[in-house]
Image 1 (cartoon, rainbow, N blue to C red):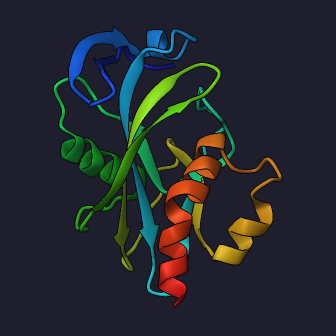
Image 2 (tube, rainbow, N blue to C red):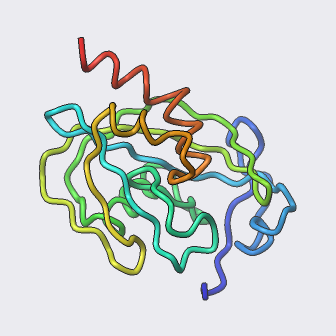
Length: 172
């Protein structure tokens, strides 16, 4: 499914302490590895979400953050953010704003998540190998579907703790 991919292993401050293969990071080992997330708002204050491909090894077919991906070995956070936005949605010109970083644990992995947002009204072209589809959601639509099992657990967590304050500030 995936070529041999090496991820950096990091401490809670984000400093690299080693490396491991993708499958080692996703097998319940709880090796802390870094990822990037980019939330995309349009001028109406709606939030773009991607529907993950059914081929994904984690959370297939669920709605998720607009852009998300692993930081590769010897890649900076900014390089990973630009690469993932280009690969997943064809975005090349955007201004990312750092929100925060936090540690997220699922049943099979532990990630240090670097979260950004951007305001963007350009064309988004979802990569059909990476994503099934994507669309802009209103705050009300997201809120009405939060506990119905259609979103990834990471998105639900991040929406409540990180994105909701941004959305609320845009409505005032």
